[in-house]
Length: 188
Image 1 (cartoon, rainbow, N blue to C red):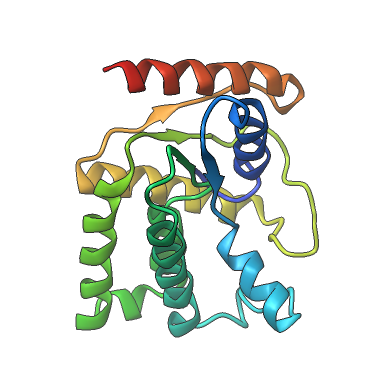
Image 2 (image 1 turned 90 degrees about the horizontal axis):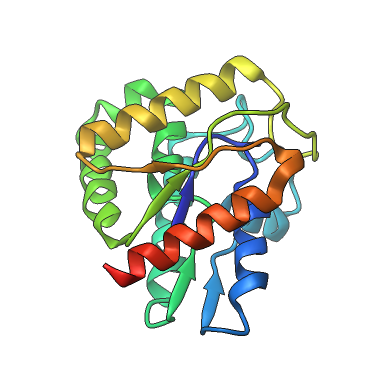
């Protein structure tokens, strides 16, 4: 199962809540937030922010997401707080000239193929203000642009995504909704 959406929509919080709720019932793993892994390793919170980022750095995120997910296969439930499509949406928005190259088109094909590895994908739409944490950008227009691109990419790839909405203040509703959908998908 994977959550998808722009930065600041509550994906990481919800992923960890689902893991906490289900860990006693099943073997579960949660992928780390890839950009934060890099940032912690190099001790630079601005490494991926606009102006510092590059196409090469951005594709490192995509590759690392695939690596993390691949190493965790075999777990009963793998929870991803972000999909590879999310990372690719940032890549397309930030580096439009690079994604138009042969390398960029090849990366997009890889993203499309890897997308089939997710059993279910739940989108968290933008519903509340971005919380500043020293890493994510607070530009609301940029957040909206990323969200729109994520939605468009799923359409391009022909992959359906279920939306989980509900104000951040009622996180329990989101949690119950995701778990209910996970159980329903497991039964089909």
